[in-house]
Image (tube, rainbow, N blue to C red; front, side):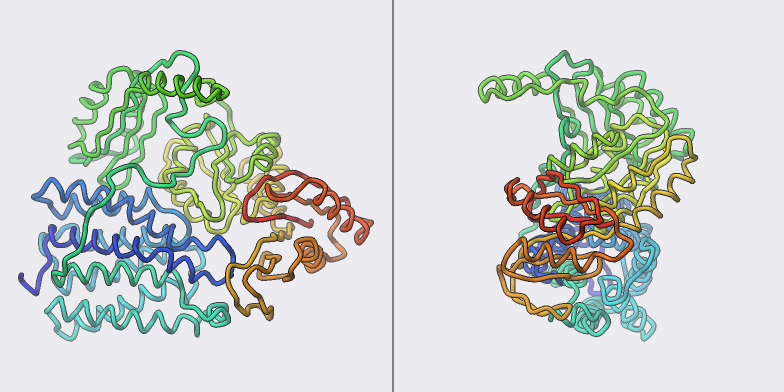
Length: 563
């Protein structure tokens, strides 16, 4: 092996090894969560992001004779659409920048690697509105700085180069608690940074020739987040199916695919089918269509480039199988029209939510589509794109309702060209409810966006859950099994009784300006217990309106807002 270069085949093996190493360490990375809550999901989000790309890379690798351009497209496109959570989106942007730096090279050298590391960091920092040091970004930047230093010093041996870069990035990771006090309090390093290190270390092992199992499950992404009700493309009708074949493929472009070309291609697909998604990203286009003649879609697509990742499913056959299972299980049938876009409208809404009660609240407020997700299961960028396709509106407001989902929503927004997407950066379910309540049909999109953002900021949110480990944070001594009240900016209350913690949390949230307290009780809380808590809060705050709603959310016993 030439110790001074990396070809496409070796880079593919390195990427797959990095993905597998991250996958094997995901639970350990989850446990690095700063707050001792049962939803630490950084490892899961990063793993699902990289494995979405690994499936595409593995398919190329198995075919043999892999080239750098196709490999870079698979890494960039796969991770972009599979990105989940802030850590996953940032990881996808690191891959996107890195592949831009190497895709034109048949063989990668140390100078090329150094420039690609710098491009990766530049791209990731641009994707985050307010970059925070002490995170995965800091670790990546530290590695890129060392890479530039080594390249400028004339290092040419890649083994030596990667070894020193990884060692330095590890040192930077160990310093993250000094940059983020919350990490120091919890006694952990940044989980996203640790995830990135596992990718780099796995890739380095492959470069060194260590024997590694590179097998990747070629199935669909695990734990894909569906949509409440008629969820996803495969929700089948109890009535006749108009278009029988669910057809998906990726076009590897060999000619210009501009906005006009995209619109013409979509118009053609609309003439032969429905449920159309066309997402263009640089030199690759992902296509989904329901049609009775997949060959027509394929022939048209071949005019723009070569095809990969082709998948054609007979939905009528699947439909019959599903009806048979439903008859055996005595399930309530799902109507086909529930999965089809409704009549065209000017403005539509998508909300991310978990819990049947909360979903019904959003639907009652006029939200068109609910993406199941939140803590522990952040929807991916592609989940967002699929939801956008289902809402038949010129302008669509997206309510992420979780700070860890906003980046994925923004990424989906940047990929949609035929609809105006407005992401309202709601960080909690109550903020999302307040935002949609304050939408006024008579106002312009810009005026509504300004009003919704302003009103959501007036909402204080608290959530009661349990601790999964001992820790000391925010001045609170926490033991495993304790109940905690989490506020917008930290832990507000800790105790051994749910109701006591809820009351303490509300007290910390209140001020003289608050007039409305809304309580959403979870699936593990009995209605009578929730009513009792409502009475206790009402006695303490007699001048406030107290609303009690069934939320049905898991993990969080209560979600309570004050505004």
